[in-house]
Image 1 (cartoon, one colour):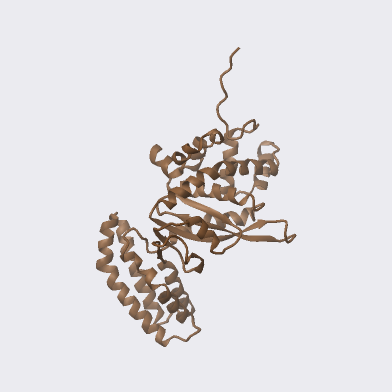
Image 2: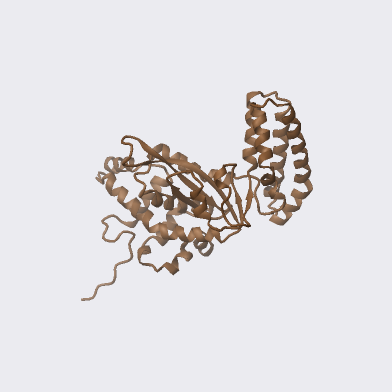
Length: 346
């Protein structure tokens, strides 16, 4: 007797189907439903008793399978010319400090309109971005956090975020809504954003947007700078307005890079938006179970957020690449990253 080979599975010899495994991962990292709650729902609604530990084993196995794929996404990102970066805290259970979680960080690196890679680190020091970026020599856009300084290759271009600069002045306006100095600065920065907003509305190319920036944004910057200089001369040293002026002038060279590099966005908002699912998730699943689980969770989040940005259903992506992934040679992995997969199958 001859039997046909079994179709490839996500987890070999697992009693649960691939669909149930994928549903568990999607429910946790897209719908932010903790595994304990999923276990209770299965028991209550269909009488299926599956422990949280079993569900956790499935999730971690998927994360383990995705780590090599995310490594290929990392290489894909570093080979490009533009990266936005940001970081957010996440609690991790450790054996040290009984009863207390360790505050680790998920560092997010992404390309606008492209892939997102999360990097799990136990700290917020410079070592994280330094290791991730290596000798990257393109544009790195971040907030004003000092850990992003003195990293990357010798020709790397540092760019700052106008949304962060605006936020500083907006806080001064919130303290005094009738502030005659800070309010006009915020209004002028809004006009700066309006230039790019109109370019998006008209679906202008990057080259056409660059021309608009030279015509409109450049004179706006001169006016903004003169207003900030005037504000700094009259602001009290410890006031919110003074701090806003200092922040803007410290980063002014990085804030004006967008006039030189057409692909550069005005703000790092896309990177910050990628952090929102993490913020929602940690309010529900509270913490990562161990430092060893951190890279696996980061791998899942990288794929989930990349598929969201690329407007491709993450469930379909998981169903396509996860079965049999463990048996694929390493040379196949660059063809399985979300960006490449979506480009070939959309």
